[in-house]
Image 1: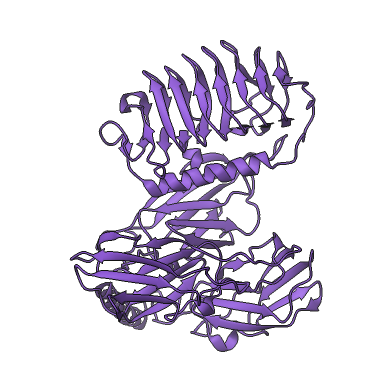
Image 2 (image 1 turned 45 degrees about the vertical axis):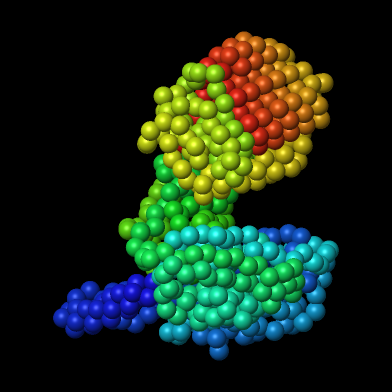
Length: 582
């Protein structure tokens, strides 16, 4: 890590000298940034707490704004960070540390009230560059105080890790945003036995970083502690110290990080306009290098899309400030400014593109599946099969529960993601981070879809729990009972239309029956949200994405154009599964 810093400083000096020489020789110095060795780039706000348009915000919490770079602390005051209730200013104290400003209201905010926060162009970075324009966001309070103690949800390295690189930084990720003034070398400490290790502590988003002053000793046991001095934005401390230990190896980390998965996937089409982008890295990254300066989004006219960037664990998210435009191609880029905890940058910029929906069709908004959209079959428990099925697309099983997968590479046109994935590479991929995130996204998608307003759309009163011989137009259909489809069911609508089926009970498709599409309807826009088990009968055919809270069973020779996303198990029996086109 320290050698990486030295190389970085050396390269910086070379660049500054080179830029001066080129400028003096009449070279292009249009940017005025690196060529002259002078920072002329305006800072940005990368994320806020609460986020823009948040609701039910705790009335006793502080606000934070995280910046893309270090700011001049003399410019971060109650003149540059303001809060208003309509047109009435809210009094409060402003503090600043690292890259985060905190606004602490003098008294608790009012309940059920819309507030607007602003970072003005009075705020400047250390080079004196102001914001390009005022940054403003709004939120609505709830009725309650936040009394929940924060927790440490993950650490790098993990507890009991061995052969840890001696040059790496340490991180701790919290369950919620913390008060950055409480995340210091007094609350985040590292010891070699009983001897404290000196280092610098920084904080961004929900992640604290401990950067040892020198490389750690090889083959040594270290213990890290986050003490109860650390508190959230409501002042709630950790319930108890978070402590973990690890053993160092003999070498430094020289492995280049990589982006292993994204949502949307590259070249995806029909992406919803309120999409939040996600990128998964191969290892933990330095959160201070993941900002909206180096994680960017541009439309097909190369116009930058404003948005906030957050980082947690191995995952970076880009949340556009406003909805994207329909029928537009966007390009996302993560630049080589992004580095891992040893200071290793990406080998090259990571770039991917996607196209939004042609337009807002009839029916509800599509459900955002996150990384779960990458899978034809995804399960939290297991996937079993009576050979041989034909699966077009990736399948995966959560690595958390030690679950198993019983499908071979010969059955899959794609990859198998699992800890014990069968068959040779490249079919088998062990990527616990990607799988864990995808399963989490599946659970979030289920909660979103199940909680949508019921009965939105026409032709919704289907009667009882039996569906027989009907044609359903786009809309949200809701049953508070088990549902059985006893004869062919047709979904008729355009390629931009959406269907959402909310079923509180089981879903059964009778043997040899079919769900059929007409009028241009697409399976990726159909969502079956089932609180119990799903069974597709022998020889039946199904269309759409199944989000089941328990298991999904496909009986002999059943087929589906869509996705099987189960929060317990998936069982197959000589089936055909085709994931919709991205």
